[in-house]
Image (cartoon, helix red, strand yellow):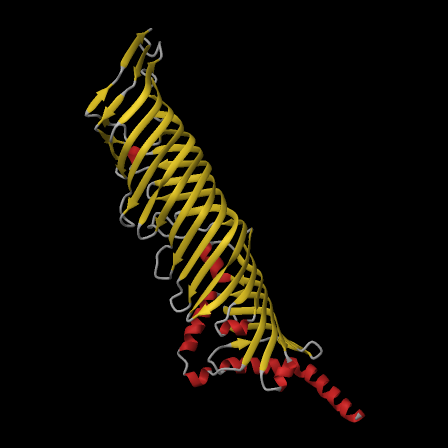
Length: 475
């Protein structure tokens, strides 16, 4: 009995000592059977914990590997192994660098192999535990470093049998953090997940290419929020469907879309956002319905160089739904506290103004990616409007109280068609001492106008105009 125990101990010690050499020879040979190149620096065996550890593993070309990891720990269930079944209690991976594009190339290569070469192993895996995973190609695509701090997936074998599994993810994108707790399941050639998310100061990358002059519409911004998430990934086509339902706080937003430049945006979103993307799409399709509250935003609207308008927005809300993709539509209700605007077509503005306490309903639509927007505004109401126009010789100040417009239609070219407009009071004032002119003031009470048309360059004409009274004074 004593000598038998000694022999077993010696064999175990010998296996432990020989493990690095065995792994360095066996691992590359095992992958070579599938037509893949792999290498390993070494490894170890812990018989007490039933764990084999691989170190310095690379898959693919050593100079540009598709997968590189510093340490891989495999926990083996010895009773199952004695019954001829390889059951992994735990798969622990640390410090990983992943190039998703090269991995997909290797996957396609495996797909061309005959089925008898691919083979299958009777392997069961309870828990997958990844730490410090660097997603190289994803980071290069969005312009921010992307790393998985930790990923835990329970019952991976059950997931392969199309049973749901729980996943816990902590990741970083640039200087931001992402946490996800979800239930994951495989459905045919795709993956579905649903759960809760939390993001903190995650940078927003630009996505779509809108021509050679512009790299992407959303050039900067930081997002913080939490809520429910669901997603579906099709492995065959690479298509992604992602839905978020919750709250998002957006800071330092900057964007440029079809004659619209925005920067310095601080906003909050509450509602649903759905994103669809596939490798065949030039840009993702985004749909949403909810409420957007804008605390501050600077806009330049420029349908053409001669009709540019610089705008500063404070405390404006929009509630409705939108779709941004092959078809672009937006409809909902707008309300706000203050907007400041000025002529943006020249270095020296020909006019400027501000509006306070306003609301309207709107519908905007573009029938194609290269088509201009058409917009319809209904039930427009504005408490106060002030406009300063003219040059130093003949400046004009216009103040309007309580404006109501039943309908306004416009297109990106700048043309306007307006229904009926009514105001409580319009005051037009020219200060005294401006050039050789005397000062003058005109007050128009209960002004109404119908059949208006014009453009955003400042041209406006009406088919009918009426007023309750007109007061004129000269100084």
